[in-house]
Each structure stands twice: as structure tokens, then as C-alpha cells.
Image 1 (cartoon, helix red, strand yellow):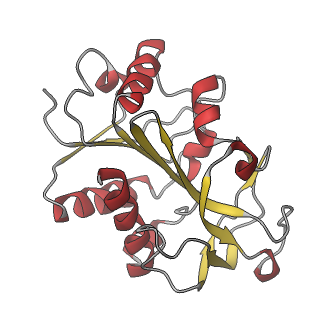
Image 2 (cartoon, one colour):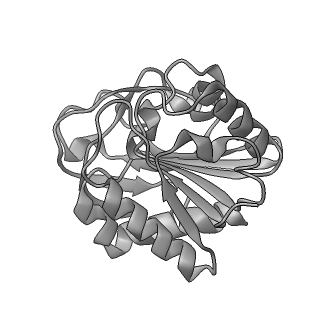
Length: 219
């Protein structure tokens, strides 16, 4: 059995965000607020054997590049399809670039971003727990991710959009998803492209977004 309810996975094989420790601490705190314990690790062996048995949630926290072994990939897919929950945060859009299942799960792939800058987030589904804590238009500074294809075309449920009129360098126009979710067999998956900077994980609104994501994933 795992030693904790939540697995916070932080391995990187590419760019490593300075915000990972802040994100791990914040997510562990949010989990604790829900009565859950959390393990933070960058060891791919955490996915091996019975490593995911009994886990309430797995988080890929700004993971980049190939961060899972073939055994770990098989285990994570089986966990999710069997009723598990997976939260992918920020640079996790750039993880596992050659794993088809993960690409289908995301519904797209990371394609870069303009420079870190202030912008605005628009709430699309205010009833969803991950969006409900936010105002309809939320002023925010982040890396505004671009994608290789439009995620909505893959059937994801969009929660938040970027307002491209509020920053420079966007290419998707009026419909620029920035957080979305979907179900996979009996499991739940949610991705948020937000969370680049360390200070994000001390911001009440962003923490509300993440806590709402946990609420839905654990629901």
C-alpha cells in the first residue's frame, strides 16, 4: 500500500521550473486540508508494482520530457482507466512527448509560449469547482501556453480561457483554452496550463483554482 493518499510527481527530463517546490508544498497543503496525506517524489519507481494502489490522486507537477518508464506508463494508464484521478499542472503539457495515450489524454501538445506577462483568464464553466472560486475575468500573470492543435477538437471540457486581447503573442484568438478536464473510462483528468511562477502558489485565487481541481478529481 502507498504511504500517502496523493502522489506529487516532480521529475523533469527537460526544463525544470523553479516553482516546483512551491507547487509541491501548496498542493500537499491543499491535500491536507481535505484530510489527505501526500508524497512528493521524482523517482519513477513510485509508479512501479503496487505504487499506485490505493492512491486517491496523482499529480504531474510541471514534469517535462520523458519522466515515466514503460512500466510506469502502463501502471498510470491502468490506474486512471480503473477510476483514478490525475492532475497535470503547467509544464506537464510538455511531458511524455512520445506516449500516445498521454497525448490523447491532454487532447493536444505543448507548442511554446510568449514571454511571461500579465494577462487575463476568462471563466467558461463557472459551475465547475476548479473555476467557481475565480471571478468571471481574472487578471493574472503567467506563461500563456500555445498548443500544437486545438484541445477543444479533442473533446475536452474547457473550464478557463485566456483573453488574448490582454497580452501579446497569442495565436488561438477568442477561443484559447487554458484549463480543461475530461473523464477516461472510470477515471478523471484535469489540466491547468497556469502555475509558472513560485509566487503563484501563494496566491489565494490560484490556490482556489487548484483546490477546486482537487475537489472535482476526488469527487
